[in-house]
Image (cartoon, rainbow, N blue to C red; front, top):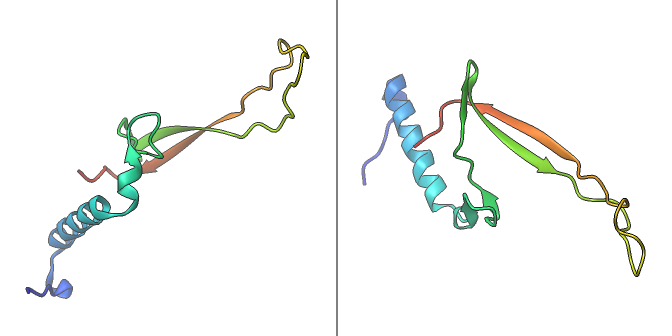
Length: 98
């Protein structure tokens, strides 16, 4: 088995090694089996990124849980709906690892 002396690596070599390491670790992780781009995936993999001056940005909309009691029985539904609370969350970071 080969040994890697990280102290002897140049900056570019270290960055290449760390990207390769994270790619393998991500693909072998337990959580990765739940990740997907479909709306029913437990873990959402966001692939639509927007470039900005600070790096790449992913826009993720979060919906808060409803807090009302709901309508039961023969009570009127129309006009008694609870409004959804949506929050946009932006993740800004370096270019994604492919």
